[in-house]
Length: 342
Image (cartoon, rainbow, N blue to C red; front, side, top):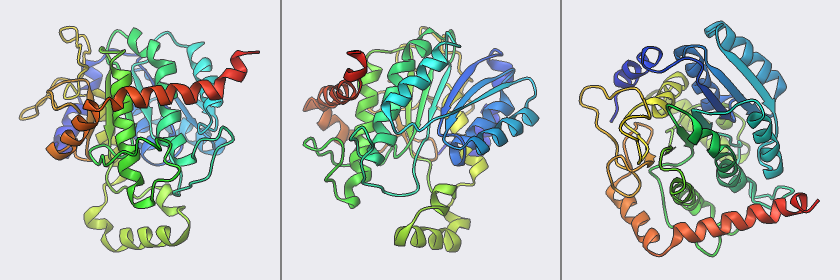
């Protein structure tokens, strides 16, 4: 386990280790883990530039004001958008690309307060759209800017890292996956999808993490019996099992900045991340190799178990990384081809 004190010690070195005016993009940061991590970014970086995307203009205005109090030297730009739609993701990325030549951190945490199995207007299952397709589209659209950054090239996606499970290759979009199996399926889809992208960008590191139980608005707004059960569970046991929201933000900033999670091609240290502290080692990647560029980690910053690594290795050997990527590109083409034909 990476202790909270080690996390805080590492984060305290950000301002003296990393150059000023670094750029981060936060997708889904108008509440919860995304908001908390954005505020940690504002607090610890010198002259930070942050774009954050969400659906609530009111929340966006509030967070801009609060970040300015934390660090008046920073710039904080809110973009209102529904990121469940690939076409909207494309528009947001074009807006950012028109203003920036490089991005240092891409942080993805958009979610919804239910296990909604409905479809988006683009005929993607909503839960899968937000946790996989939309996030991969942000990554691929902004990857040239991440690769162009002179230091610290990181992608962090918050979902179910370290909790990978069986993958149904006949139903990647999870339209028919039983609820009891959907987390494992989508978590594996995300991790192997990141591996596919990682092959094209060895100078960028990709971290897929599970944040633990965090009492956010996603829990407080979750409808139905599941919402009642979760809120009761947190009320009764939250003192012992919940990760406080501020700590979650600190831990996610650590994922985005620590040398524990380097890209596979670090160009002899050009990633320029915050150096490792005492008794902290470089993490194992999803393929079991130390520092292999794509990481699946739990709430405590530790890599996935040997059991998960074995599961992923078996799927990798069956060509699932390539098959997932063919499917993903096919879905993106299906959605965007009408626009491209105009």
